[in-house]
Image 1 (cartoon, rainbow, N blue to C red):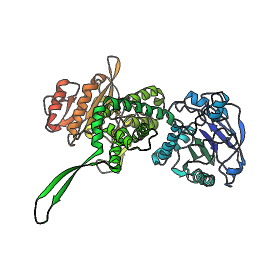
Image 2 (image 1 turned 30 degrees about the vertical axis):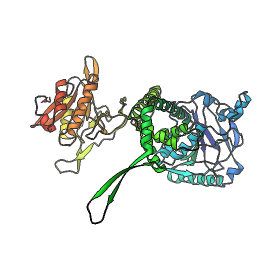
Image 3 (image 1 turned 135 degrees about the horizontal axis):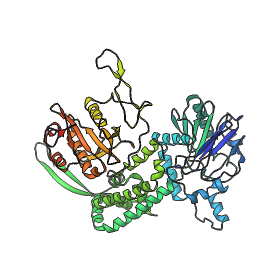
Image 4 (image 1 turned 180 degrees about the vertical axis):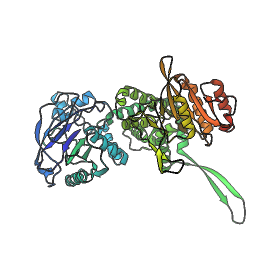
Length: 578
């Protein structure tokens, strides 16, 4: 990634670069009015002075290259700062922005000329995917905010997406508008299909590839002006290799389940219908079944189902893989659609995909742990795309907003101070945590637990899916996956070790309370050995009662229970909570 100060032409313009390994935090320091980022991967070569095609008052400056700049190059300078993969050493070592020449020229110089014609398919695929994704507001906002974040700039107030259409005049106008937007409104602008090369390489003939995106963002106060960040998304080739592995897997399943596949092909080609015939003056209706050969529309519907099963990227790429050089794609559409209808293939492919994803998560586990909470959550969102729930590590909470004032229960004052307790994992400077947002049951549970002689700490578990929230998954009445989040985690010293306990004040007024209680019981059956206690608490008959979910007999009662949850707490399985 290259960063460029886009103050007006009379100002000096500095460029900074970042190591393409996003898991390594760059070292930041200030030098004069420009902010630099040192590449922690390898030392910088001497600066290179070249003319710059930059945003200026005069759009023709883009063509005349009036503005001078200084470029400090580090490893992988053209890699996007938002990259979520580790850098490829071979790719970085041959980067045209490092070698000063195109890869094809470098290969010829080394005696290994590239005699292939055109741009590799993977690069086309990367470009097409990026151009499609960059129009998504969330995707573009993440690129912009991560890019400026890597440079230590302030988070923008808003992100604007613009298309320069690879036109120099349009690009000049967009850069000027983006600069004004950054200065006047603290907004970042992401420009795709840019018409300028990377800063400092306009005349170097190092590479003919333009940046995948350019971000213009405001400087950090008290400095005025904007930074221009040019980025290149290079990691799609590695994603592409994973997709090609799935192609081989599907080819193998097509052979292994050929019999079922042939039957499914016949079903897709045959469209079943029924005609109804009636006559005026009678109530008799005749039903006639018929079979027609599928047309392109019917095949398209079947292929859309395959896109839902396999994902649009894999389904489309396998279609092209199967078709090869064929002009007629109907058979490939049918084959791809057919693979998605065979249950055994779907289940096995899900297993293969889960295994590949697990390997990637394991390989990058340490790097992901070093990211911010927001970026870690993105990986958790990816993990959540799995067909079945995945076991993940609970992250340490970082921030929490709680109110220290609550409405006066007596109505005499508008607000009063919220009750506070100690020992929460996240507290204010005095060690207090407000519990005014908790209901009476929950406050009673907290008071009971932190009063135990072996109590060390407690944690109010967030009620939303997040990296710092303990979630328990279950299937609802219609078979869809859902998650519940127990209210509290308590930590006690047991036998010289710190042990965690789940204590959930379980409301019995909700329709799904029985389903959630069974889910927590199933969780205790599978993971109970990792906790000191797993308990559900509720008030029944005016008393607080507890169900010990680590107890096998209690779990059996819960699984067989068909009445209300309130009635369950009146059974012998429920004990008095003290």
